[in-house]
Image 1 (cartoon, rainbow, N blue to C red):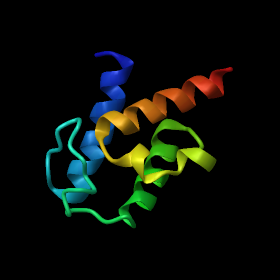
Image 2: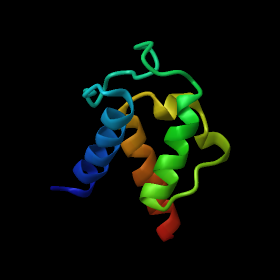
Image 3: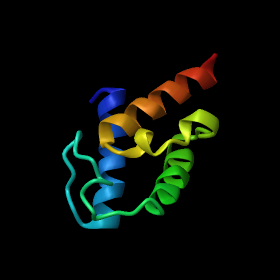
Length: 84
């Protein structure tokens, strides 16, 4: 499994545990009506703790949390920035 797949799998697993739905990687979890914008706070905390990153400033846009694919990209970008 690649790093990208491991990250995506962990995010998808968290979403499934919290919503009881298996999400496709590009499914918009907020457009679905299943989760609210308040759920974004839980996502931020989960991502920060699970992947040892800090999400702030311009990265705290709802658009970064809409899909598993977008969250995976955010995590990868912030981890790479932290390595610099």
